[in-house]
Length: 343
Image (cartoon, rainbow, N blue to C red; front, top):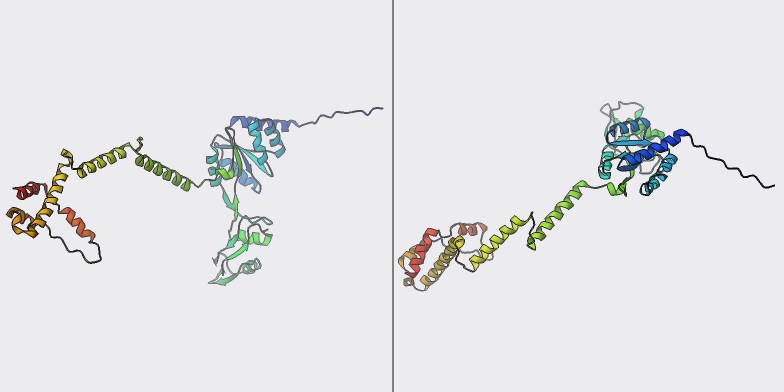
């Protein structure tokens, strides 16, 4: 007799169906879906976090298998975040961008005492110094936890800084109690954002961790380099056109001066240059023959500042050079100086 094959239908309670449908509804209602770890967060603290995020993000607590069912019935791109659902997980729905969401969650983290049997998330250090405890059995309890303690000035003091637990160590009940009494809270409590889905892209938490100061610095340096490149290649742009025009005007002025092109804008400079050259020639000529120049020019040479002798093996002081620049011939003296030399 052939064996009878029986088909059994799996009965899913209505509340589970409703839960799956609610998750699917939220997936379709928000632009970003975050997967957050909630392991070790007390219920009261979790409720406070949800309250603080109200109006900005919707935190949905559910069983992992129901989350998997909801994601499995969602678009293919959304399904990919299911690999981040593990341990104690919640879904976070928001219209904020992933980077802002990460920043908000990080700011919401708080320090909390470590529980007995908890794993030290980092090295736990007890600093030396006075405590608020009066003399009593607490001294023995501190010493029993490996913390050097004593009594000074009627107060219990920690005699030296001590690392009482290394990262990864299990903290026993006695040490956990002492740390709590010392108000040392080594646990960083908050929603652990593992990944965020937004518009077809999944951002893992390590991608969202950005040093804003460094990021702004990089942008500033990039702008500076782009500006310099535009100036050096004479590439006109809205941000550089005024600088390029100023540079072009300065270079054309220098070219006109060096080529001695007669232009109204540089006549004063050309005349000053000619006057200086004239005085130099007159001085050389007078040194060879005092009768080579006229009396007016002799007076002008006598009135001109004397050259100071430069110290040996040393450059002329900066102040002297600046003074010479300030005492260049005035425009009113230029014409008379030229007349003295040639007439």
